[in-house]
Structures are given as C-alpha cells and as structure tokens.
Image (cartoon, rainbow, N blue to C red):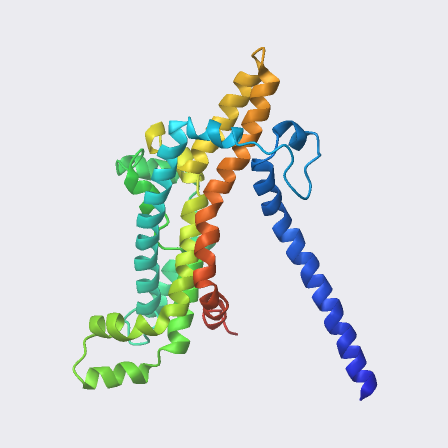
Length: 291
C-alpha cells in the first residue's frame, strides 16, 4: 500500500512537471510577442530579447497609430465578428435543436444533407461563381453569411440537445399548452448555456482570425478585416523598406509594429476567454459524440 502511494506521488509529480512544461511552451510565444512589442527592434532581431523587454520603446505602437487602414480593418473585424457570430449561433444551434427531435419529418434525410458537405465539396471555383451569380462578391453579406452553418458544430449541438433535453420535458410543455417555438426559447436555450458559450467562442475566434474569405471575395480595401490589412501592410511595407536607402531602419520599425498589432488583435479573444472558460470543458464534453 505504501509502495502504491509512493508510485502515485511520483506519477503525480511527473504529470505536474509535464503540465507546467506544456503550459510554458504554449504561453511563451504570447509572452515573447508582448515583450517584443515594447523592446528595441534591433535587439529583438539580434536575439537579445528572451525573458524581459530590452531598450523599451513605443515606436511600434506609434507607427501603428499612424496607419488608418489598421483601425478601419479593426472596426471591420469587430463588425464581422459580432454579426457573423450571431448568424452562426442562430443557424447552427437552431438546426442542431430541430434535428435532435425524433418527431421531425425526414430527420434522417436532412441529417445526411448536412453531413455530406463534410466529405464532398464543390471547390473554390464553383463556389466563387455561385457567389458572383448571387451578387455577393465584395459585399458585407458574404463575410458574415458564408459558412453560416458549421457542420461540425452543428453535430455537437445536435448531440447536446439529444442527450440533455429529453423528449419528456417537451411532452410536459405540450400538455401545458407550450408551442415548439416557445419551448425552444424559454426552456431549451436557458438549459443550454454551456454549449452556447462554447459555440460563441468557436465562432467568434473563427471570425476574428478569418482572412481567407475576405482575400478571395473582397475587392475594396475599405472592407478588409484586420488580419488581411495586416498581411497586405507587412508585404507592402517590407517591399518598400528593402528598396529604399533607409530600408533596415524601416524594416526594424515594421517588425516592432507587427508585434504591436498582434498584441492589439489578440487582446479581445484573450479577454473573452476567461469569462466563458467555466463553460468550455462542460460544453465540449456534454456535446461530444458518444459511441
């Protein structure tokens, strides 16, 4: 018994050390970006910044504030994230709830219709031609509406409702005169805070970090999200820096600004996560597919 307890302690210590190591590996890149944004860009490029900022300067942030396109992109990203997350949440959760009810007509066929696109996709060219025919190219609508129903998240929501909202509750509500819509909004959704929090996080992070759809379907720079603005700004500024007399100084300032923009762009997600972290594990586990 004592030997077993001793082995358990050794196992616990090893697990703790591995967890700390894993945490450090995950957190250090974020920490490095933060200290690099306040450090002298020359020292950062020379590999002299490791554990704390050196040659503290705000040159990168000052340069960032002079770029109007960054703040336009920031505003666009906030708008895309808020509207897109609302649309994703409304469509995906509603579809998941509807298809979790066994009384829904043609339930199996509709489920198959949702699942097929996970394995069969038309590709970029047919999708672009379709969006162009619908006059959605270079519009706000295409960014917030495209991918409105995420199939994987839909499956998680459907499984959650199947396992956590029994048919008996719906039957009791019907006896009391409740309609399906009333039951969904007044009973099902309030009992689903965990999965809703997880879906909000998934969708919001996806929209906040998204740039691919904007790069393909948007033509006007005034509509670009922050990530696409940052990509284009880095490419353009680096090219001009390399071809000018003071190229190295501009390039170093660009590197400092890059870290500053990453800090500003990452801050909202890092602030949002602690508020819904308590729902995260529970929501993923109760909505997981069970064999």
